[in-house]
Amino acid sequence: MKKSLARLDLNLLFTLQLLLQEQSVTKAAKKLNVTPPTVSKSLNKLREWFDDPLFVKTPQGLKPTPLALSMAQDLSDWLQIGSQLLAKRGDETPKGVHFNLAMESPLLLIMFNELSQRIYQRYPDAKVKVSNWDYDSIESITRGEADIGFTGRESHPRSKESLDLLPYFIDFEVLFSDLPQIYLREDHPALQEEWSMEAFLKYPHINIVWEKSESWALDEVLAEQGLTRHVALTMAGFEQSLFMAAQPGHQMITTAPQYCQRYCQQMHPGLVSLPIPLDKQQLDTLLIPFTMIWHKRNGQNPKIAWLKETIKTLYSPKEN
Figure (cartoon, rainbow, N blue to C red):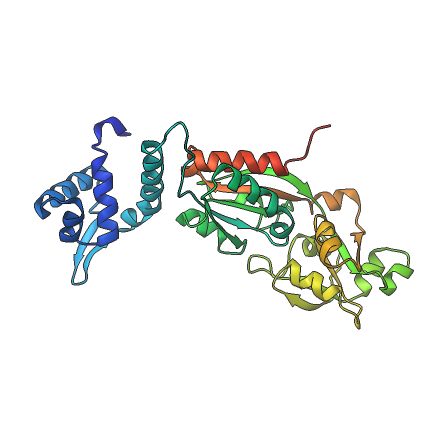
């Protein structure tokens, strides 16, 4: 049976956070300015409420149980929000707000400036940390190390990066969809030929590692036709692959999302893009839904709710 929050002394949660920080009843008691038996009594109430030991004694001090560890970030967020609420005044903007974002690059490089300006307009003293989206980003969101992720997924039914395969405790919202394009130098010999599947496969490819995988939906679609790309070079991400495609002295081509056209205009104006020579049905399976991703526990967090709405305002397709 679900327990009512009204039955819980919320001071116990503050005690729990201190125990997680100090891993000592004595040290927590000193910070609370109470006796160690008082903290022990509070810990017993917490154990009964959560039906879990929460901490076990070791020679090094109290060791949190997995349940206690899983609550650490939630407690920190809850107490931060509580402090902000208690400190609110009509003439003040909340201070000390932290945003931790995980964003795909180079999307980050061409889109984050607008978002950062909105954040600092709303929270002038905010601290913002941005990391590149990688294979560990879902875990970072799960652990509470990232508030929200912004990245492309895949639509192919056999893809391991499908939105349908996200864990049940992860929420998401698709902002816009994109298609991969071929990028090559403006003096590339392929531009002198009729653009076809034969031309596409004729030249060596620069590939990327995406979430620990060196193959993706395009390779699945080609395999269905008994075809395969000749991958001559594998890089860590789109920035590196586009950089190499722009270099002289080779005939390699690369594949990256269509939005990278804007990135290339700024960084690699000598690159041009072509569509992947597939029919519409095949291209539909390559569609990339660019998606906001967050943990369900943040669904009602006012800071995250504001961030989600701001991202939607900036990056969702504008209606005519």
